[in-house]
Image (cartoon, rainbow, N blue to C red; front, side):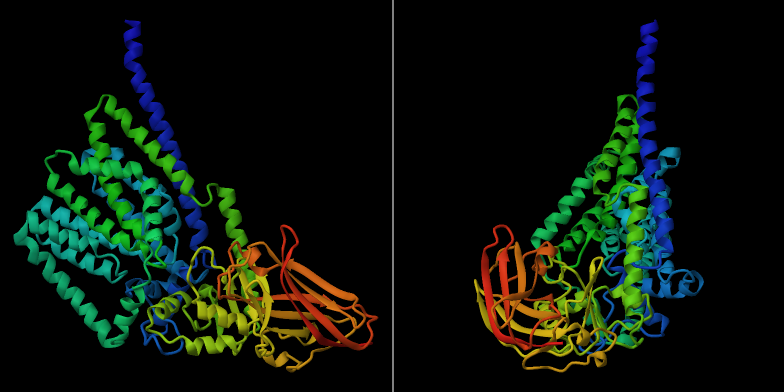
Length: 640
């Protein structure tokens, strides 16, 4: 008898322990989710590069105009999303943006995340009691939601409308009241005009009704087409053909199959238990099979839409809708397993634990202290960037890859770098007006990522021509965190092409005493003029500005040396540092122009005369020189 009781109680204890572990881990992740969102909601700066352009587009609506325009006309900035999120953010701004210009938009994203999770609980059977919150908890605990729930972007706000539309379609079917389809249609319209990539749900709902309730189709299609058509005509009336250019052409980016498989594999690996449970739910025999199949067909269409993640600029936000649908179907399957009782009840917490185990490695920073430290570091970086541009006039043209630096400081955004790089790649935008301004250093400041030339992560925010032009017109400048603040050169040197060997050319060079070097805020501060032969005073420090180009693939571990020799052949100054690219974590792209600089401090007792300059590139691994060039009588030194 005693053994029998122990045998009966053992599964109960096992079930309790498994659920205790699962609920504890889920609770910890949800607490982390809440804490992080609390920090980011009022954070004064962007936490992700994609937030910056969106804040700029909201600014257009705040100023009373739509962010859609002729792509050829300066400023080169336009919105690539439909305007629903921009309008809602602009409307909330006066009430929520006292602390940070990002708060209203992030609040909408957080609302979208929480409201979508609430809909996951609502779609569960009423008898599910506490289990109805399980899919919502798994949805919010995922690394995808952890990142995107506080981004100043339209994705989750659009997801909420899409999910609401689906549940209204299901409710219309269950209640046998087709009038609810009008609400579903309007929710789908709101979703599409919040972000135009959310069109899977209305297509799936139409196909599902065509199969199950064909006579109800007009209840969905007529209000959807009329409402959507009215909004589209209004936008067209205001923006005209620019709407087509901005929303369609500008989103037809270059496609990469490796990128597609990378993101798809990452998602399937991260959400594998949810995928398996969703397949189980779709195939499970049940009385309400028609309602479950609505989510199944929507998941199929949404997953097909997610294949556009292979285009340049796409990211994991393309999986937010499939993730919500997987959570919805997985919740149904988990509840069905729980209802069957016996050993199958043990499977439910085990699957939850398995899913959590796959979530954890995908978090960028898995720890409260680590997340707080990252935000503090980001804030310090942005404080420095904002302080650096503060002396510039408000209307100064700043070419910034970090668009948020301009948007949240109330400055004009002259260029949406990624968008126009894609337009240039398609051949539908002439980039010569921009590259001319960059190459001549016509504007005071360029802000680029520190690895912009090598672009090891293939961000594609600058075309090859834009990068080469910016290397010509702007000094190397100073690094602040992930960014380089690059002032315009005091003057643009004429090319003096010299072959250094090994397929590396020195296109031009300048030697400018630091006292006359040009620093922003304005080029007028430069005291020097272009000189055929630079003149320096003994004891001065001179900046050697070098512009290099590779026609062959050079080694990755290169150092660049600048050495100054006196009339007697004695070396008087030298600086050796890794070539700028070695610090970037990427290779020197063939054909790319690279700017680097070396500082030479001359002894104070030098005699007047003409001095020789040696520029050399050598491998750091063995010290072997692979390319060099000597300029005789390069610099005239005047004794003190």
